[in-house]
Length: 313
Image (cartoon, rainbow, N blue to C red; front, top):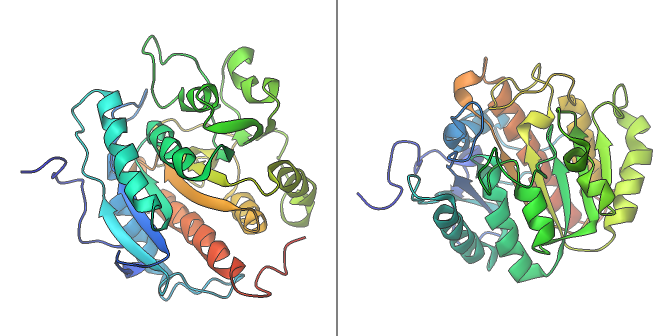
């Protein structure tokens, strides 16, 4: 067997049953790695379950944007990764494979745990320059060590800012609510970025989210922006299938509204991570992830078609 050729590396199931990747503008690729989790493992199986859930979206025509990704999207299957190797070696493989895809495509990646975002940002930084970053999560991921280990799925944001991959002033975190020391949970704000905690967003949806959306748009501006979405930003009622669930989270409606209204930004890529199917119920989590990824793709496709984003304030 070659590197990474194992049961959880999927090579037949495709998002929305889209064609295999050739020269399409948009590429979707799985990153089946979960070797840096701190609690429940299993996110390596996320990519194939998100793809499976996406089949319920049928022809993929979005109810708001009025477009389907199918003519624009190719599925690159899953990265081949040395899952039993040290994290730096795995990340080097992810960065190299991501860079090759980013050279020709607007990419969406399916994790995998959140440690995979750091090499994805490294690849994006090399191509687009210093990035803006929108980070949906229950956790700040700005701890300076990982329970005594130097790096993991809870340190990547700190590392990204330290490495200059993203501009601190153009970093926005949405949905934070976990326990944690103030130095970590407030780190992005202390560096000049924005944080919208889940508590601050309670009961706010639809038109009431426009002040939040306006602040994010104003802060990000025209800078190339990467969006990373940890599925645990959602309340466990909407996404139970994840490794570190935190009650009191965002609703799927809130996150959909934010994705729809942030589509006009200069978004250059996205990942959706931490879907752990073994803890899911009735495919709630994988379906939510598929719908969020689909909405992101449709927003980017609609942006290139005149008048498709007139809904945005």
